Amino acid sequence: MSSDACDLLCLDVPHAEAVRAQLADGERAAAQAAQAKALGDPTRLRIAAALRLGEELCVCDLAWITELSQNLVSHHVRVLRSAALATSRRNGKLVMYRLTDSGRRLLAALTGTATSQTTVAPASLEMPEPA
Image 1 (tube, rainbow, N blue to C red):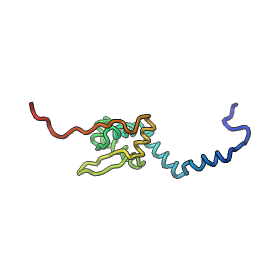
Image 2: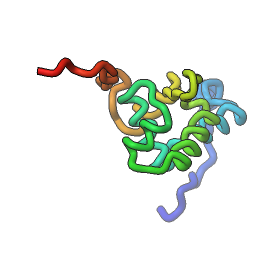
Image 3: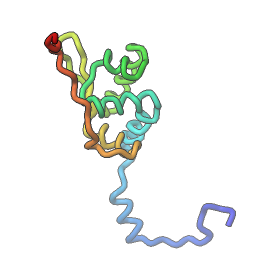
């Protein structure tokens, strides 16, 4: 068998129609491919993983965590946002990023980790009392 095609044309129409009815249309498939492509970059995959663990982080934190420049991180979170995998909100002078539900699901599917993986809570900004 040298070919990947069938030698005989036979079609299970009811089964094929049932599968076709559940298949994403071209527009939805293109959106899903764009999301997969966004997480296909190792840097964006690491940034998304950091967002999963940190829940909500600013570019400064993401740059420190990933050991990348803020400009590079800013570019990559913009790509994640454009692909609807991350969302942002302004908090004073900071822009905070977090994964969307679809971003969490896709990241979990790619990495084989549960979407409910333990997150790391931010440390308190209060200074400890001197001993």
